[in-house]
Structure formats: structure tokens, C-alpha cells
Length: 302
Image 1 (tube, one colour):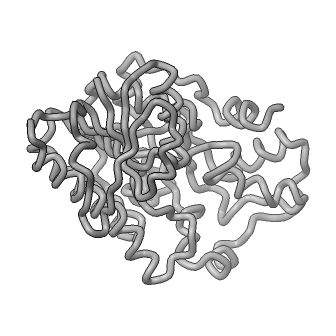
Image 2 (cartoon, rainbow, N blue to C red):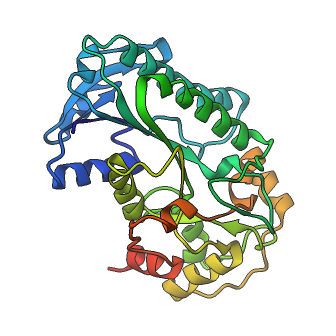
């Protein structure tokens, strides 16, 4: 086995790299900057997805690809940045396709491509599994659908493709959790919007372990990368406050205030997606953190 990664230095990619190193699994990665070659035991290869450029040597001996490339959605959604969010994802996959097509010794590979539960329509009552086809029609849903369509172009060049639809990633330093924690630490914590919206989440360590697990476990074309127990936003807020031993003094922040502050990006915290993974429930993959309380306590502990 030899793994090629994109997005190796990001939040999820850096954790996956740690596991690959721990398990002595050979890997290499694409980067726009060779200064990223500090990753121990891995070769860095230049690429520029915006120009569909890549170093063909990166594909030598590769049997698996983990694709995590894509601009963050945690920046304000101007018209130009929304284009970048889509372009970064689609062009990365188009570049991977070109690289596979131009291999000197073409062999089919297994591809794990990151996706997101943002494809599912916002709904307070419906529960989504891998079989669900009730997709949204907002920007997040559009991004995911374009992302997945680009990934599916790799099917003829791979012996299997898995789209891993990732929920809210809980991490101590990056992602959604620090942003949710900040007002609580300042003593101005409150639920967001109605507070009734479902939050489907996964601990960063479980997500990295899941990618490694899926390298040699083909569970089908779609896997929802979420922990077993989703919860509502107001429940999550209470867990965060309790863990920090902080009070919640304020009423819920109205949706209109969040939309005024964040613009269209407010959808990230206001949407409701109650997602489960029937695929993982049938597998032997074991979550280390299957409750939000356990995940938060581990991340916020000393």
C-alpha cells in the first residue's frame, strides 16, 4: 500500500499523516509549496490545481488516494470567495483525474474523497442515512454536489471510490469548536438560532481513524462520517458551558442577528441535518468518542 494525499497539512490531513506515520504506511502528498516537505517520511510533490499542473512522479507506486483539498468554508462568503470554494474542490479532482490518466504504468487505485453532510436539506425532523436523496438547494448543498460529481469522474480510473460525507469536526484548536467555545469563555454564551437544529459531529481523532480504516475496508460508494449520537444545538451549547463550568446567561441568538453578522455563511450554524451512518453501524469500526459530552471533555481536558 502507498497513499497519495491532498490537503495533507490541513486539520484532517495532518491527523491522517500522524496515523500513517504511526502505522508505517508509505505515503506522499501534493503541495503548492515544497516548504511543506517537513512531513517526516513523506515525499512532497508540487501541483497547482488552478492550472491543472502536477508532478507525475507523485503517482509512482500509489495504490490509494485520500483527497482532502478545498478552500475553507469558514471565511465570509463573498461572490469571489464562493467561486474559490467550488473551484478549489472541483479543480483538485480534475487534476487528480489528469494525473491518473497520464500514469506511465496505469493501475487502478482506491480513492477516498472528502465530502460533507451539507448536501442534505436542512430539516428539523428528517433523519438522513447514506441512502437519503433529500438534498438541499442552497450554496452548501450546491458545493457538495459539484464536489461529488467531480469525484465520480474518477470511477473509471479507480477500482473503488468512497465519498466520505463529514459532519462537524470537533478539534481543540481548529474548526467549529473553538468558535462555539469563544463566547461561552467570555461569559456571553447562548444557543444559536432556534437552538433546535440538529448538529451531526465527529471527533477529529475518530475521523482520521475512519479514513485509515476505509483504506482497506470498502463499505460502499458513500459513508456518512458522523458519530452515532447527533444532538440539537442548544444541547451542545449546554455541554460546552458545563464542561467549561461557565453559565449561559443570554437567550438564544436570533437567526436574523446571525444572518446580519455572518451573511449567507450563517447557514453553517443554522442548518439542521440529523445524520447517521447505517454503513458504519453495520461495520466493525469502533468510535472512541460516540457522545458529544465524551468528545468535548477529552478535547477540553488538560
